[in-house]
Length: 108
Image 1 (cartoon, rainbow, N blue to C red):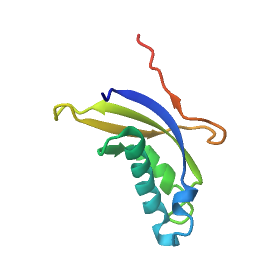
Image 2 (cartoon, one colour; image 1 turned 120 degrees about the vertical axis):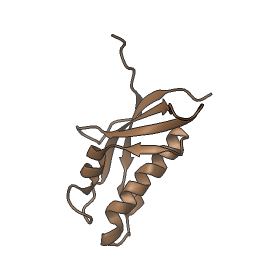
Image 3 (spheres, helix red, strand yellow; image 1 turned 135 degrees about the vertical axis):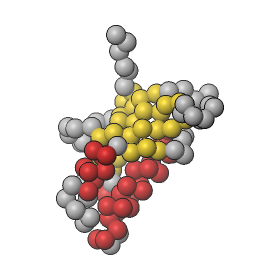
């Protein structure tokens, strides 16, 4: 049974774009993030945040960051019965040495 959940991941983009020609690096990185999230969360509908897109494209099409830290929320789609989608946002801070962790949202 699939439930709503929020997790943080560090995606090592360099292994996905190593050897890719310069004019395809940033678009390939975006596709790699989407495929990584689809595999981890088990959803085909992946919605990326504008800030994450800007972070990947920050230094141009050629110079993509080696790693990016993201927070992924799997949520129920209101329009479709029982369908799930993944919302991906960028997380500021260091990317090295951090493991995948589940984010527990506190109820107020």
